[in-house]
Image (cartoon, rainbow, N blue to C red; front, side, top):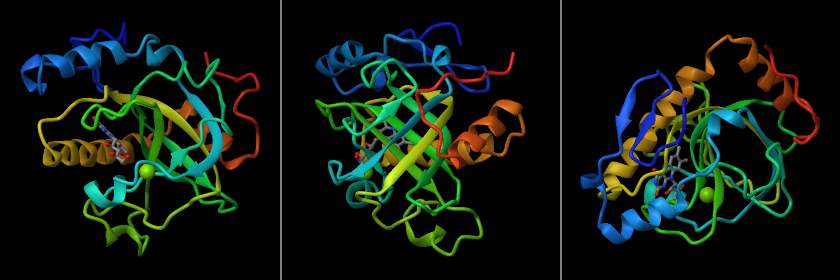
Length: 218
Ligand code: RBF
Ligand code: MG
């Protein structure tokens, strides 16, 4: 990816997508989006490693969307970027682990201000994806969710790839549709066998810090 321009972005498969202003609610919305547009190019900070504790979010993930997320406590968190502020907003795929459970879940994760809702504080919200044979998999509207709340449990995740910017969709159905597609993409990309992917799974499985120096292939 070259840079995160506000008008176009590159998809994980290399194609470009127009972030057409006609899809936005209003000029006021557009204005707030450009103000929130990430400064750092996500590709310069990937993979993003984080450890934290799960806290209560706005409480809309399960209720409004049927797509629960495990919100990270920013203050209890350690991040591989220089700071929480430096986490580039956007939607990512990667891997996640909760508490003492050694299972590694694929995740589709949102970082930012949820422009559909216009939040005024930045959140990091991974949606944990249950394995296809997991009996909990079909309990949510999107079929992939892992329900249950993880409040107060430790969480560690590595975001391996950038999917798209966060967007102010026209309606809840459009937002849900986009997130479902993110989940499909996260599942597919998570199956990759690149060394960089294996390295991040190993880090997620470990108890290593998010902020020690990283070994990056190449
Ligand atoms: N919120 C938005 O306002 N715009 C988005 O484009 C958006 N994409 C998301 C993608 C994923 C994979 C996830 C897990 C969440 C996304 N959200 C987005 C955040 C969503 O609005 C939030 O999880 C719920 O409002 C619950 O806090
Ligand atoms: Mg949540």
